[in-house]
Amino acid sequence: MNLLIALLAMVIGYLAGSISFARLVTRLFAPEQDISKTQIEVPDSEARFESDAVSATWVRLHLGPRYGCLTSILDILKAAIPALAFKLWRPEAPYYLLAAGTAAVGHNWPIYHRFKGGRGMSPIMGGMFVVDWLGVVVTNLIGLSSFLVIKSSLVASGVWLVLIIPWVWFRTHDWSKLVYAVAMCILFWASMIPEWRELLRLRREGVLEDLTGAREVRVLGRRDGATARQLPVSDLLSRLSARLGRKDDKH
Image (cartoon, rainbow, N blue to C red; front, side, top):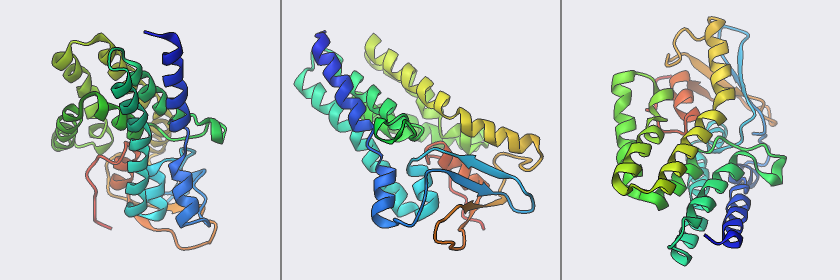
């Protein structure tokens, strides 16, 4: 592996990943909105869920699913495009894995925004598509199906990241891909620690008796003072884990 090309892949991946499409989409379509810190009010209590993540999840909560989906696609592409470019240019070495991995790092800790970003699910998925697109599809389907068994959208939505590790190994027996898959899994779950702490805090306080319950919450902190949209907790939790859980349409 050429050190200069490896460094180039990492720099390009990180800079591309640091582009905050959540901020750009919000600024373009709803400039009055502030998603730099989101608060969720739990009705019938004074408790609030707080998050400083800036990602497609929160764009969807503030602006709706159309803009959340657009943001997620752009976040996927900002990792997939650099990774694919290096894979086509230098297929003899795993430079593309460096580009994909650092894109996820840049998404979570963007240099353009004082290192305050998202949690990495969309760019991780983008990089994984380049590694093994079939694995992403299969493991995501299994992850969605697992919701029927474990009854937790928060856990089920991250199942695919765990399953992709043995999938990559048995499909390729490539150590570099295995290390990449493990690293991305660790990166995502470590990045989710603040959200886990908030949810567990609310549960300890007795506000959320069941983390997958259907009690309603409200998105707070809008600059325009508009009435907050009602969202069920089960829907919120699925989006916190990269929008792969089952949406609860009951209000």
